[in-house]
Length: 255
Image (cartoon, rainbow, N blue to C red; front, side, top):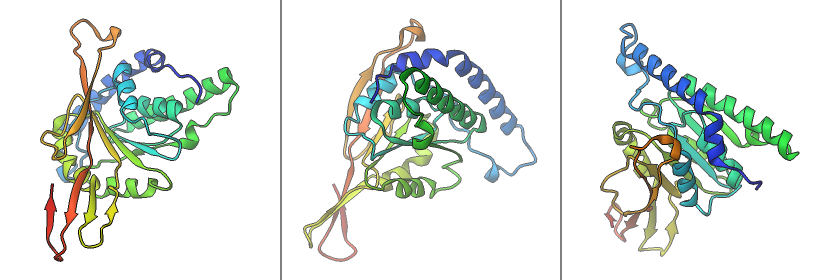
């Protein structure tokens, strides 16, 4: 793939990122003050707009060295879309961005189009981000089967990976679905193994504590533009969970 600088990407959208943060906050307040819509029908705004720093983004991509054109990265809480734009530029992977905020999805589509146009003009190559990326305004906490459908639809010839940079409140809500998608199984009777639906889960700053099969951790240094008080961000790649199918029907054992 052509050279791509994630730091420059963040700088190009610094102003629009600040504006989106304010818009997202106003939208969140509007939802909380909406007395006409039933709580069960309101989107669950459990995490603020948290744009991934360029160093965090680079660390995440380095933790998925096998990510390639046949694979798909699903960004849950995609914000302005920078993670998928950068990942696709660097690895050629496909991507699906999911966010509960219509303004975030609009910003992500705008970034995709702008980066496609500028890359085509500068590198003399055809624009392809819009062929590789898709965006969905949806609430994974209301539609419990959404992640499963997205994973199944995007496995194809490659593998599917998840990226989450969201608050613990939302991580806890999504944990059962993500754990279910992360189980690989082996049969003691037939001597066979099946891969997990999700090949890898990467979390940034906030994590699934007590993940049964452990994780690989790396520290992303704070960006220079983040201010003197910004700390290193821990990025974790979670190991697949394993389920042993015992010889007796109906009996299962978790490692």
